[in-house]
Every structure is written in C-alpha cells, then in structure tokens.
Image (spheres, rainbow, N blue to C red):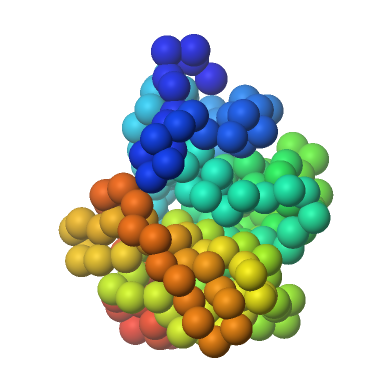
Length: 212
C-alpha cells in the first residue's frame, strides 16, 4: 500500500485501526482486479472488476472494516463479494467470513481466488444477498458492499446481540455509510461519511431480481 495514503476514520477523526491497515497490506489488491487495471491497483479509487461491479476504493474498505471493530473471534457476513477483496481483508481480522454474491460467475471466480491465495476462512455463496445467509446466522458483524434504500430486514434479524452492521444507505446515485449496533430489538444508528456504491440487487434491494 503506498505510504502517501493515510486512511482516516471520518466519524471519529482519527487514523483507522492499524490492524485493519496491516490486513490490507497483506492482501494483494492487484490480484483481485482485471489485469488491464493492475497498474492502478494501489491508487485510492474504485476500479471495475467485471459485470458492472467494482472493487471499493481502499479508503472505504478501511473505514467500513474499522467500523466493525473486529477482534478475531467473530463470524462475519459480507453482502456483495465482487472479486473477493473485501472478504480477504475481513478474513484476516475475524474467525469466519461468509460472503454472498448474486452473480454466479463473480461468485465462482471470487471463491476460487480466495482459496488459491490461502484465505480458507472466507466462504463465498451465490444468492440474493439482501436475504442474508440464514443458515450460518447469527453474525457478530455484517458489511454490505452495495447500496440499499434502507436496511434489509433479514440482515437486521441475522445480526447477533451487540453486533454491528455497516451499509451504504440512500438513493441509487448517492448514499452515506450508516453503522447499526443491535441491542435486543433496538438498533442504534450512526451516520458516517457520504459514499457511492453499486445498487444492491435482490428482494430487499433496489431491484427485485430473483436469483435462479
């Protein structure tokens, strides 16, 4: 990771947890993007990974990951696997990571790459991410890497007591990161920085697309 980038937690106004930055340094971002884009792999910007999807800019990856405050013992759910990069970062900070991708080809390639690179505690599933992954719930942390008009109810229900969920919430062309912490049936919300993600597709997303 180029030294010129200093990733900041805007909500707290302090540098991101150094454990998160170390995890990002250990994940070869260039291997998670198409070869033609690899000269730009370590710039602080999103890049296309195929099928209209992107790999998030490193700052956003750092900010969202740090917000979950992982200690290494958690079961984490990621929605929107893309190329698998975010799941790889999470896998170095948590016990198990379950990632859901609605596009079969992306899900297959992400799963194969994660296994080939040795991220064996990151598991990719193909399906409707807006429904979560009930069979492995509850989750101590959930990261949604696609924009939703509101928090999908199944994800809130699959969050464990005291668990944290971060997602980009808002219109299709502009959102803000919102962090939710569960306490019983209550969900405390913290509004963070503005962002822009590809739309969440599925029953509780922007487009009601049934996964075959």
